Image 1 (cartoon, rainbow, N blue to C red):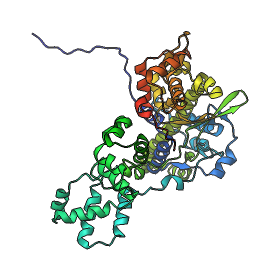
Image 2: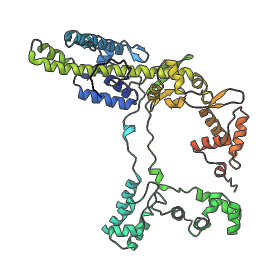
Image 3: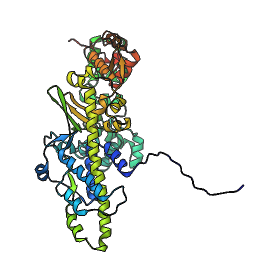
Image 4: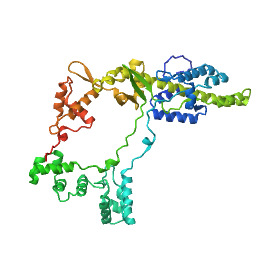
Length: 490
């Protein structure tokens, strides 16, 4: 069998992820704050990029926008395109007219800012809530304890979880600190007197008993119920509990009201996340019967090429040793061009996607949640002629401010539920209707999932009981047996 070498031609199609395409995709899926951080990092790494001051921008900006991009930005992009022709990018040319390039970039600036900003002060975003451990340690330091007891107290606090419960046993702490278990128990009793009430308990029963003691309910029927009959509270079988304790039902109900007012997870009040102010990526304003879309570019650096390189390049003419510098500057120019064009493309894409969403969901913006239409990524992709993956990147982790409130862009997408009359309704609208029905129910006789399904059927919404249960769980609404409330008349 003989081996031979020969040349053949083969024509194939292949998708190549160029650095420009990779950068454009990366910028598209970034949130506004992430984009600002990326731009600032590029400005650090690329000395040719600099930020235009507000005064310089306002002097050159005509104040007009097309597809969410300011006119001065379009002038910058035109300058980039002219630069690509001058540099011969893509046609193999090595030299280009530096003077013409610098003329194009002498005054152009890219605007990524808003004058009508409603953004809040950074002071509101950077404050930190005290943690449960910080709060307990502050109280421990104010206590009159010996040095040994202080160390034991620190060990106890260090073993309290986010809910406020002690997760280590007394023997484990005594071994850890090398002290007698009686000392650990003595210090634990002092820690259990700290705020919040019920902290450092080892189980739910002890947590409730600690709070009952603080309320002065020791040796009360409340204490007896907590110690021996908590299971009846879980099932809300108060009549049987009254027979068990041989007391009137009214006394049981009064005790139940006191117990249910206690906090079973005292540490949670220090673990709630601070309410952060959401800065929308897009604003949708109503103007007459139409909606106007404005991209939120507040705080975004306005970019241009640093004109200092005019003098550097002018002094490099006719100097053979300056070729390396020219090559370096050309590379940084290309990097700057890719960044500017990618940001401009990102802004245009976001604008087109939001414009399409507004077109599909105009009834929701006009009339409210009941008129939210079923919408999938494919609908918007076909409307603006883009791929679904692009739409997915645009709507991820981005917010829009509308006359109806602030929403994630993903909020406008969702599945549909078939109506009995043949129409469809968005699943989010069905969830809102379920929430409305439950909010108006009799707390003493809450609706079951089957009854909710029947009420929805009266509104031409055909939905299974199991689907209602799933939606209810998603919204954090308890089943009817646990929503039932006792109305006590004194």
